[in-house]
Length: 286
Length: 338
Image (cartoon, rainbow over all chains, first blue to last red; front, top):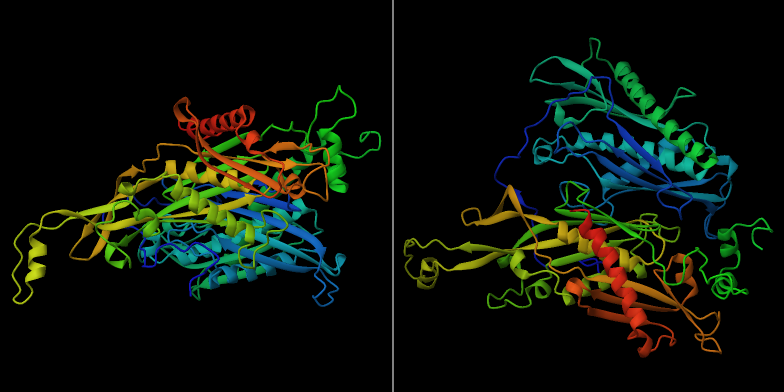
């Protein structure tokens, strides 16, 4: 049954364009140092009617045809829960992550799919650990993240099945942007949480393994494992940890190292959030 | 007075919106010019800014900002084979766009763009209305040519191996005439990042700007695989000659309960924000295209209330305001390219 509340287009099935020539630019390899994260741009207050909002842009990979990530987040509340809701001594947090239809290589629908719901749940866990929820009983906060542009711009990404690794980068971005928006809304938190990603990658088939921060799956031959953490730097706590892939059981590349690398990445991102927020405060005082 | 009480403009506007707007529009002293709660003059609009091609996955995109209303429009082309179009007729060369539904605009407000638009539910009435208005204006304004969306194919003229008992098909195969094998379908997705009144003007400007930015790849039909193949080299822009622009104003009557004030006095507020939209019942939208110095009116719609008369709609002041607004938008849309 078609969604009658939207305009659905032609009755027959439409196909995204299939290209028969190769892409104009060659696959670029990672130019950054293994422990360097990509430059970020963060701005708060993009949606004045919301209690808090933020916009995050991660710069594209090296080369012209890469695409970065663009995320917008709005926070509404704290506001009273509807009368029908049961009593809650804490603030009720609800998160919502949605890809725009034009965000990825394949067109996304308007209804949330399971991967978006997953991201929403992971984001909720990450934020819940940082917020002081018992200061707002009987109230609710809505955090809405819209992904305007996701990664994996190239057809290769779909063919090589590396897009699943991009979900980690998306989650890391979601955590960072939501944290900035919550700070903009003035909701009490124990610390500003920030997201960081690290991965164990191989650059050549059967080649040496290495660990990198802020990985872009396309820049490497294969990704063996990746880890995304939501980290509170001032308290040295991890509120959410998402690990995926396989690690060799022996050697230096073990689980603890990967997690600590991800923590290192989120420390770098945290510096950016605090710089952006203090800039806002300085501007408002000036 | 407000300053003495230590209350800011926005606080007053929030506490008692209707009397505050009325008092501002009818200042007690002659020295003060009538203004609106947001500090603008009644006919003053928010300056639009347009940013093109900011999305890399879409074939065309535009970001339009007027004041605190921010809209992103991304256009993506997909192909549909004519054999998959249920009501396809080869003789139809006039109404393909609307008959086969080749344009698919959708508006999403539920991005938390304003407190009343939260995700989780079906699209609101406003979102559905806006989508439908954009859809009908796209078709009625004849902005796009069907030729840009056709994908032609020439049947091979080589004699096909005759299949006994299937004479008809053989005849067709020998025909070297080009025919339309498929169409491009344009998915026009309009996302509100921030919402502060006047959604239609911003959404429509974003649509027009994104269509002007759209470049579709070269496509051809591959009869062996029975599918459309595209080439990345030299994408072809759509032909969008005109720039129709929507201009919206609301009518404030100064009377909270009735449509019309007893003395018949009313104010026309151009490019309303959310607060003004909530105080006014009557809205007028005029879509104009003033390219080449002549003013063409593509659509006029007026809803609610009776204050706005036909005389005023045709008055020079009102139409000149629309032309001025067209110039602003046209400069913002085309200017960034030069």
